[in-house]
Image (cartoon, rainbow, N blue to C red; front, side, top):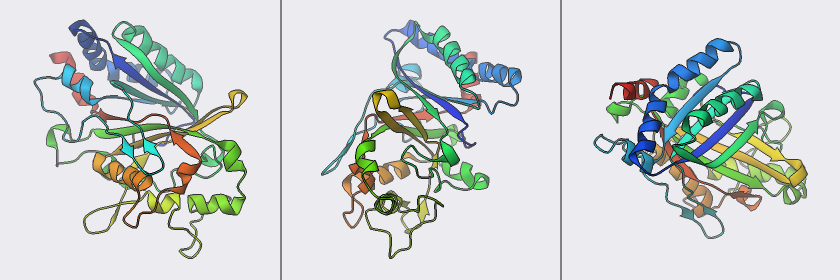
Length: 305
């Protein structure tokens, strides 16, 4: 999950159907999930294929009623600000599928559907793609603030603070749609002040140039000592120009969801100085859901129950 986002991605959110039969089918599938991903990796060894699977809070309670729960896994509560809201939407099971070719993402999604169609129902599915130079659909490079690959796991994966779930991760997802007509109505300089970076070369604006409401400034999270803390983003653009649909699928993997939550609170409700994220004037959060992505070993062990 801390690897590069890939050239193509599928983000799938499912709901778990009622009944113990559906619960058992999902657990059986999860127990074989790593074998399924290994099979596709062996078939297509140079495809940059990767897939992760996670559970929402309510699904976790149903699937593992007698076991401990990750410390910070709970239903996401909407964050309502003076202008905009980070909405909360349902989701029991989440799949993040990545590959260099969309056909392989489709193959994995089809295998998931074949095995889970009687146990689950579709809530949302978004097909993302890597835009030029790793840019978001609004034309700016995305993921610049990600930690370096060598230390990404330190920010993305649970550590000794929750030893039963070490190596897992909290994945928070949002589907943002963009008002591209409004965005394109801005000059390049105005867009740069909204983001906080240069559009062409991705350089950060100087303190004198950058407004306090810039996205790169307001969305920062800090620890108790004031040091900046990060998450691992794997955002992808999505679009259907024929329908005037443009968006960004935000996904943040974090060791602690409280970090992501602090970022969202700053964006939607304001930072310590009350500054709101000006990027929200041009995009809308359509979804919002938290999942815990357990380790491969955790999933494999479900087959022993």
